[in-house]
Length: 203
Image 1 (tube, rainbow, N blue to C red):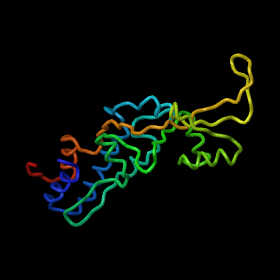
Image 2: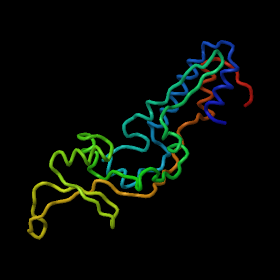
Image 3: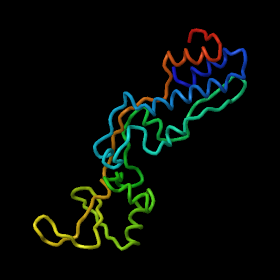
Image 4: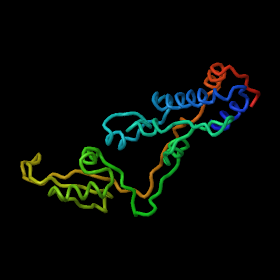
């Protein structure tokens, strides 16, 4: 049984509908707490870890965690959810395929700094680099997009060269591991029932 169905059954058992806000608020904090703790989640892939520099699964900008909210629908219904379209695949896992574009553009290590300067979309980054006088190029053989520094520097052999950096990895699909966070344990349900002082019939 999912979070929403469980909460609806609990709400229907209440003698005082004013407790709906308490139920919703507690459920939100419990679900957010799972994201914040990061316990039991599949680890970040090496590429994602390098891009972020640090951090834990489901905790990059905090937008997913903060998007978990509740809404009182009527005197017997409280709903807990998120408006983030990617929440479902993060919870259940799955494969993301390139659809409109030929490739999925996966940011490489160091790209985040450029995103903060130019914008988070690949087009924003490429246009920003070009406007600032940098060049970029595609490597279809290695399925990467790179950018090149303006000045030449000496390599390990002492030769002057333009140093390049990988911007994006190009992939047809990416597998997202399941990281379940949107649920309530029996213990958490017990805490909610104790707080609202309501007996819940067997679900």
